[in-house]
Length: 83
Length: 311
Image (cartoon, rainbow over all chains, first blue to last red; front, side, top):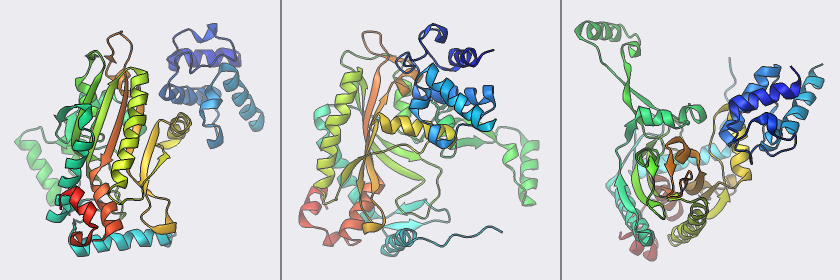
C-alpha cells in the first residue's frame, strides 16, 4: 500500500471527516473537512503506528496534520531521517 | 538514587505564602497537599465574592443550577476527560460484596496490605469541571436563542502541590452559554471584559492572557497547540510573586466550540450542533489572590474592597 493510501485509510478510520478522505485533494484542508482537534490526535497516533515512527514534539502541531500532503511530507521526512 | 532538585526562588515564595496562610488560620492544613480547611473569615470573602459575581452577571438572567461534587460515570464516559486528563481524574470506588469478602478486606487491612482490590468503581466520579454535569442534562434541542446557566460547586483535580493556589478540591462559579457558534464566541468575549473589570475593581492587578489546558502526554501537545492557535482559552491572571512568576490564573473564559455539545448531542433549533462558551471563576484562588494582594488581616484591606465584598 502506498504512503498516501495508508494516510487515507487512517483518515477514514480516525479523522471524523464528512467526506471520504480519498475524494479530497492532497492540499485540501482536513479541518475544514470536519476533522476536530481531538480527531487529529487519533490520526497522529494511528499514523505513527502505521509507519512505525514517532513524531518529535516540534511536529505535534495542527499544521503537520492539516492536509493529506502535509501528513505525507512529515512522514517522508521522518522515514528519511531514520533510514 | 535520583537527584533532588533544589527548590527555586518561586517554590520558596509559594511555600512562604502557604505558611503565612496557615499561620493566619485562613487555611487549615491536612496531611495531604492541596486539601485545606477554610476559616470563617475565608468564607466571608467567598460569600462576598459569590454575591458580587451574581450581581455582575445578573443581566444574563441565567438559569441557576447546582449539582453535587459527583456526577454519573456514564456521563463522564461521554466526555474525553480520561483521554485528555487521566492524571487529574478521580473515580469513586466502593464495596459491593458480602460478609465473606468484607472479612477478606479487613484481614488484608489488618496486615497492612492494600485492600483496593476488594473495591469496585461506583456509578459516580468526582466532578472535575462543574459544567460537565450541566451538559449531560442538555441532550436534545436547546430553546430558541440557546441557554444560559449559572453554576457553582466543587471541582476535583488530582494534582497534589505545596502551592497554595493549586488545590485538589475547590469551588468554581461558572456562567455557561450554549447556543449558535457566533453567539457563543460573542458571549465569551463580552463577559471576559466584564470579568476583568470586576476583578480589577477588587484591587487585583489582573491581566487577560491566551492559555491552554494541561492536556496529558504527547497527544496533549497537539491539543495545546490547537487551543492556543485558535485562541479558545483566555485566563485572567494575577501576579502574586513579583518578578518570579508572570501570574496565576484566577478565572478563565473559554470557547468550548462543539467539544461537549457534540459529546452530549446538544443542538440548536436549526438542527446544527450547538457551541458552548463559559466564564469561570476559581473561588478559592480569587480569595487567595486578594489575601496575597491586601494581606492576611481582612480588617486592613482597602475600604472600597471591603465595601464591595460586604466585609
